[in-house]
Amino acid sequence: MHAFLSPQMFSNNDEAVINKKLPKELLLRIFSFLDVVTLCRCAQVSRSWNLLALDGSNWQRIDLFDFQRDIEGRVVENISKRCGGFLRKLSLRGCLGVGDSALRTFAQNCRNIELLSLNGCTKITDSTCNSLSKFCPKLKHLDLASCTSITNLSLKALSEGCPLLEQLNISWCDQVTKDGIQALVRCCPGLKGLFLKGCTQLDDEALQHIGAHCPELVTLNLQTCSQITDEGLITICRGCHRLQSLCVSGCANITDAILNALGQNCPRLRILEVARCSQLTDVGFTSLARNCHELEKMDLEECVQITDGTLIQLSIHCPRLQVLSLSHCELITDDGIRQLGSGPCAHDRLEVIELDNCPLITDASLEHLKTCHSLDRIELYDCQQITRAGIKRLRGLCKSGKSLEKKRGRPSGGISSDYETKKRQGPTAPIQIPDVRLDATAHWIIMSEKKGRCRVPG
Image (tube, rainbow, N blue to C red; front, top):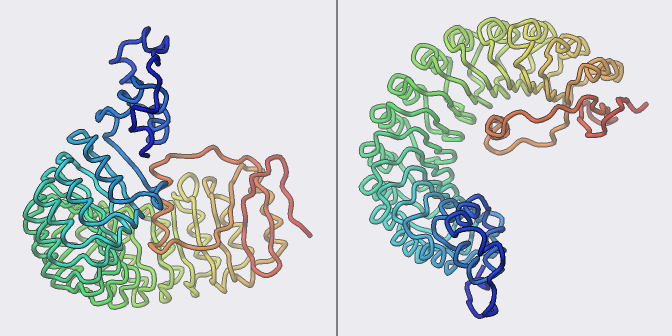
């Protein structure tokens, strides 16, 4: 990214016809639609194109993730000097070579920055947040996930200098405690998204501060924050009525009281992840379903006490349900799937259902799911009662244009990552006749992009 900065690389006579025919303003407008790689290539064409391509107005949004191994501090410094006040969004996700010094220069030069991702930039410390606090008052979105040297001092600095902050990701910053959260939320009342996954020192008192000072909160991720209990989460529910997405997977202390509180206080809830919360029961999910009718995605993996009763309530009261994980819910039977398949979400909404390690599920469940015309994926790992004959009957699904795929693993943040990405990208063109296969060692369904045939190997 340095070669094109040198004027010696061009000849004296580099005036192409296009430069004479089109005004500079129009060329600059055209360049504004190009990505970083294309701009760098254009900058090597001629002197005039070098000036146009490197004009700061073209560098308002930069994502350097694809170049993460090559990005060092001096690259960030050079970019900041060239872009200056034009730069609004910068992603340095995974750029391990970038440290505090470069980001101080960046903060001094790019004072209008609104979105900054430093996810995985493990060299940075509290010093970077001090720089951002001092020079970047317009910052709204900051991602510090896996920056493990970050402490409460960073949150205090951000609270003092970045009052417009709307979204903060400090997942896996396990030095942060309730004191840092308290300082942050008291001075950033507009917070809409907090990602605190793996912040294992956070407790109920931290949640009480959030509930008291973040009325605009929409998204909260507390995955594996193992100290939290019903007490802190109930405060969140009562203070954050706009909550739409909550992840408390791995928070084993929570009970049905949380589901009750969500139902009573958070009617806009769309996404709920409660994987490995083994104390939750049908009673709690009944209360939730009857009050939260906008639910679209639920991860109930290893909620081992739930039965078909939960599925009955979801089928009746949650017509927008699109993604449902019931993995390791060993009390679920074909009757629960039948109820789900006959509910209002089945016809046009339900896209993903995960049933792996549900030992009571049989081929009958596959028949019940035929009514789910939008179904994109079924997971059936280790469902020992699913047979080859049941899989073969899925040929009927293929002829209806359904797409089915195998998924070998789940992202560490649950299944909402895939779901939200798909929501942002919009629908994809359906594969009209997918290829359905059955593996001999595990029962699963796989989508293959081999159009025009549907077969089950014998």
